[in-house]
Image (cartoon, rainbow over all chains, first blue to last red; front, side, top):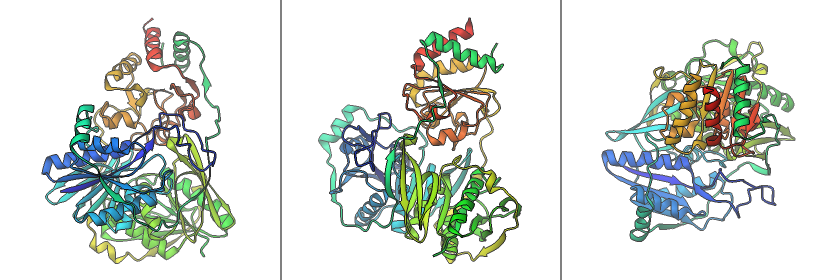
Length: 256
Length: 321
């Protein structure tokens, strides 16, 4: 089975995000970019399938800050090839553009069985990638996938419907999946293996072709939510705050 | 150009989700200002029309591929058939599995714009203006959606559901099943109800809940100790479950359990919308997070930015004293 995994970089949510002077994007100058965690889950699921039934895993990403690290790390984890789509304008890339460019590359790649990517990304305002890639290519897709298991030439897909209810479906042909979580947590690639991948393999380049973006939301402004300041902050050192918390719980009759 | 609003009911089986009624309520307001009507698409078994009394019309599509289980391909074809038949100005999805699954592909196929993670909607002239949560709720984006048909997916809890539940007698309109449903390559299988074994976090009056901020599986032990001291289960947000640090029955949130304890203690939980959806109705929320801008503080009643590793041992000490 040949599985393509679409990966991307994203502003690290752990960091403070500032709004750019344009007021329609975040200030990207001082932000650390990391791999989208759901894409890592998609990669893990693809690698598990390859380990079970053989085949090939190819990772593909747009050229974004520190993306080489993500791609080499994927190779270190077991991906066979890595592809970078270059020539894309820097900044906030609409998901529609990602989908169009990935679809162009997928068409150029010839035969493949499945395209996996993360279920969503923290800035995918104009749509989630799996559905857009699927609709662009005319290939069925499924999102919020928590399991993809090979059965002969098919894939048994498990989707989370919310509240713990799971729905299974069988993909008998080519499929695009938005992965929420793999069957196991993404594996860790030690830095030595990543360095090894950097010295023994190379990233293939694909020049971004012209595409028609289609209609999308026109962002007027981005701004931090106004704090409703609902939470009463408990002041003091850990001993004092601990005492206040225990007191609050005691007042509810839940601790003696 | 139609002025109608179409709500997609995100139900595969069981109860109609509360979110559907939030959407119907908002759809009535929007349709009112546009001068259009409200339709709700119910895929699969309709049951009765009573539940959807606030809508003007109920659209149904019947086909074997839609009668049991869930195939996103089958649903996409059904939703598209109804959107093409109704040609609404606005299609409202929730940001549940079906909205995440289909909103993008439907928007793409009808050549309309989509705004995801919407928490507010308004009409300006002919356009829909959407306010969306981005970056896990850290920022909001206001965007304009232009076109004959525009699509949004709405985060649960954004609108009151009462307005979507009022009585009435909607017309039922059956839309012909598209021929494409006969040649699916993504076939519906079984639907599995939640695993009832293991811990039940929904009945506890107090929950100790842990998030990504705990840092590692080893560190969870300290929170488990705290939960044990209170004699309550340890619950968690999605990243902790996805990392395999705790099993799935411990998960609070959209894809986990909805909880409503008297006190919810949140340690190292930032408060992503999907998590808030599962716990915001708790009677009292006490949050501990080192980031003073963490969205959890917007729903918490009490908060502290102390490091959980400094605080938890002190709480344990107080309990043992």
